[in-house]
Length: 296
Image (cartoon, rainbow, N blue to C red; front, side):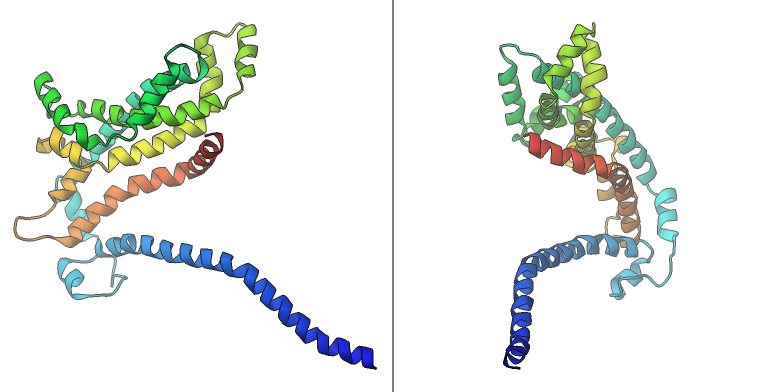
């Protein structure tokens, strides 16, 4: 009887100790999830607020504090598409961004392949040059770029700015792609050369397919940077017909009045392409960033 009584008294004690031990183990994880949830709410709230305002008129935005709109009124979107320069600017941003990405990959992929897969005297110095160029802000060279474009007659041309965008994104693209290409086993190249593969064949059939995660990562990072650029487009594209979407959004207001509903609808239209690209390529982006971190 004494043994059973002691075990009965010891059971609650052991249960309490086990509970506190599990709580101590879970508390750091719970704190991390709490911080992430708060960060997610703070990040998503401005987007939800802008999305809700895009369905309200100006008076409702200024007088109501409710998050959700009373009704889904599409009048702001109709006005954006019919009475503003936003559709033209949207088309300009799409064409300029796509052209810049094509130019970027056309230059960055073979350059990264040469640095990563061939041994020549200046290979390490070229790589260091591009790695250091990542630290140079584009705004610091914007005055010289403006003068150069003015002298060459490219100022205000729609596709002249694609040269600037491709050049600005080239350092980070080379830095990331070289990391991926250097992680490809050299034995694959040796086996391909023995089978009669040319240098172009090595680049097209082996290096590019195995570096697709890195290429997708570069495309997403460059797309976001080019799509959201404001200052370079404002300086190099002064003509209204060639304005990009980020610049057109800044002019989507009257001299003495701001229509927040119309501006919110325009902002939503500007955000949608980035969300589409991200959701289509998010798996490649996360795997590419993780692989680049491990390989680097």
